[in-house]
Length: 351
Image 1: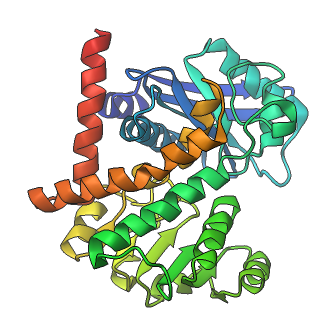
Image 2: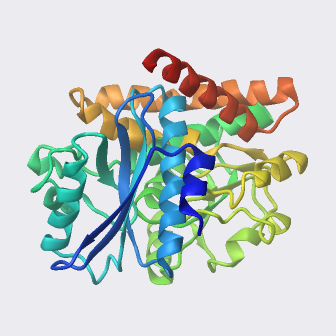
């Protein structure tokens, strides 16, 4: 893996490898761009197959955070961290405190928060050795899990997609397939069920999916079968890279709108969706609710203010859909252009 070439091509600022012998910590912090402000992004804990997979993932996630902040008009740059390990087996107080020390050495250049495999209670452990965290439990003075805000943003984004395609955001009877019902996927399913959407859900934890399906009175299907559901909206809410050459031909939807990061395996898949007439809500636009939520903690938290800002995600999507249609370009290209223009303007002001 030619790391320095990848850093140059993606215009990354920093890639930090973190190792602590005593706790067994193996982590990577990627800072993509701080033109808009200090990098803000979650820490993910995942049992990656290889260390190279971890580096590739954290770099992709960090860049997406830069674009997410730009589109959400947040004064933060893009950064991300991954801890290599099984979140069900390898967590420890010493590991999180060791990670916090690495974050602290960056002196505010990167602010960490929760992501896949990390809970508010883990952020509390990290905060024992650094003040550069957001998302501690509410009982500890934090804003708690941002899952509700991410899900609420995706919920409003789905309505914006329906309005653009069909002229109405009414969810009653609309078939929607949700891939992944973790914290965010479950909250999204709940919002949609309350609005009488016709839901299909799947998760790699099949028992959990069955319990949620029973609770919300929705349909459940096998994780691999979710791609074949005849639906209006396909909503990826698990890990990234699931929109690819193998899955796109199987999709039977008009809209892709979900909470997962880096849903497209490659950017060219955004062009493929455009050519097939599938409306894609760029992930870093529609799933910005969680980022909005944690960023507010840095300026004085108000759930009502967060709710109002998250609702505006639908307006941003509606605007870029119009830009896409007017220019005959994909929604991903439209979003990238808008985000890159804002980043470039910030760089010029900074210099």
